[in-house]
Image (cartoon, rainbow, N blue to C red; front, side, top):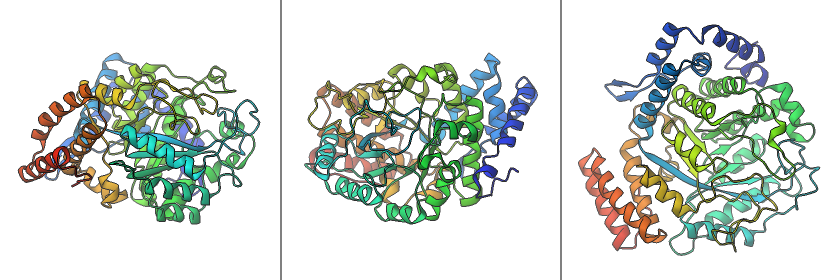
Length: 483
């Protein structure tokens, strides 16, 4: 039985409800009157407090996704762009993944880290190796990291993860500093989530992979991850443990995408209903080639056009949630979807354990990669590319460090007030990057962009303060200003 407020996985992600949703969408995918009403409901509306969006239910959003009318599709894309602009503007937050260990006791059939893969060498970074990786990432200009490791209670216990977080935060050469660590590790206990919270992590991210329970159990034939309920209920335990920023995601290509889409939004609705705040981020990875993994064996792959439509429909359904796309995707694909809803991207990513330190930007170790990286450009190239397209690359971590997380962040975001600090914060962190790390050409483009965009700060007092801070970053050697 479907119950959005239940704490049981099979009730808040209810198979029968998803099937009924898919049946409903099939019957209504050409219902023009209904679709126009759904689009009108989701459109941004000006209120006394700013701009607000109603969002959509999983059933309403699924109708949009199923509609194949070219004219409606363009309306969906246009609405997604308007919503993205209303709440995130032209800012794109930058981050990089850091792989700590590829030891894993699970047997996930889509991941090269699975226990039975004998082709891949196993490696776990020491704290000194982590320090070197962090310095290499800081020397590129990164301020945010997402740490990743396989599930192995012997090699990768929670104590190891906590020690790694401490090492990352404490490594501060030159002007470098990692200011936010997002954690993407296996589902764990409330007690361990409390420990992660105490370690001052940013967001806890866990991909569901698939919401289809029968498929989930086949794709995870052995290991702790085989337990569908324990995995699916992890976000509730994380929030019980005090982590109010959590990130959802499915691995598109494992199961039928419309099923996954409905399940993903049901999970977001569940978090909102139970905890008063939905997911901080949603990631939308697709299955990619890797050691011992051939993505063609999964027959549910989606083309780039469908992928873009999924992103647009998610943005319309959950207008205030951040959306992440990684270097799994090509430059061309990422460029297409940035304006449709994406607010965070990775840059210069390495998916190998120990993939940064000791390697030039052109070198790329492949022996311990979790998946092939499609976009292999340097961070400087990605930053320049974003600015050329009119985006502001942001290295900002201010909201997390100022306590604007969970329901506090969403309360500000939902009335557009978060932009009063996000825009100048993005420009100041971009100025740090330009001053400390950028190539001459990137710096020239960036300085012109900052001069233009600072005029878009609506509050005159904030603008003047930001101008003062920008000058102190450029000329005074000061860092880490924030509103």
